[in-house]
Image (cartoon, rainbow, N blue to C red):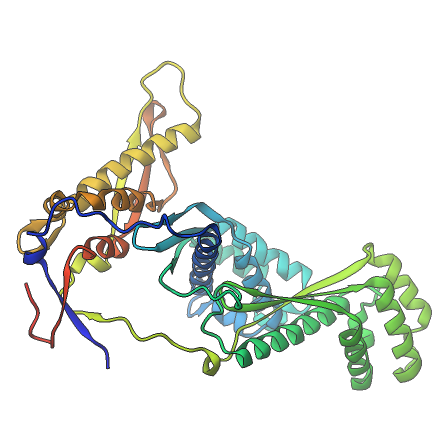
Length: 425
């Protein structure tokens, strides 16, 4: 049963002014690193959902294309997992950590085109073409995602960070599935190698089911695989196989299972020369089954949070040089960004919490919230391409989701369990 809570604000406003806020000074360096890793992993998971939801054609999205191709699905997941954190991780006094990541629309466009060129048959599998991707990318905006982690969640020393609520069975199943995915990816990567100037290894593997099965079995037995339990609760397996070892495998498979005449052992020596590298690598991904994850108790359902708590506010900032020497564009953008933050601050201070109590009035009773609010304002991000104005001016538009801001304020309010219709105004 989900508990329903209301907020008794009037009592809070009579609380002692200057009460000391909870701090994270007692967090060890290991715990801070764990929080940062979890927040970044959560941000990348959120970003994957945003990228997958981007439109490709009328009625279809990137997610639809991913569902039709294992190669595309794996490649885009790996691309998102490599996105760097933007700025520093924000760790608030209540133990919540937040991290941001950004996916540049142009870079995603380039990655999709690269994959279409590098992976034979991908266009046929997904129905995507370079023209379709180019057309879709014109409407894409760069995506922004925020991830969070909470220090109240236990960090078990004998568990990888992020896997504290996964059973031993779940970890083992995720490991095995990631290894199998890595082996499959390694075989697919090998299949793309040219054997001659006209043929790829895929043509040899496709000559008979026994040939492909024997090659895969030998590859699984020979490849070196390492598994990492990533903080986003995904097992990441990395498989490695030298080209020389692949040559030996194929020569043996040809001798024992091949019955055709189109390929000779000498072709695999040619493959080694054409490969122009010494080693094949591939990555496999897998998550633990849902049934092996121990779910936490659902959070209480708020009954009377203000409407703005789920909204996003935007603001514009401008900067015009006043000196003869015009600053670099990066400096002008930073100045415009700070101007936009000032406007955002004015906006959120005027928000009404309950009755006629504004945020500014509420903070007047709780000065200890100011450091967290200042930290929260730094999470605002540029929401649209900057505009160049006359006289070397520049304008930026920033946006800021207010949910975290509401959580900061709510810490100084007394929670009251209530049934629907019994909320406290």
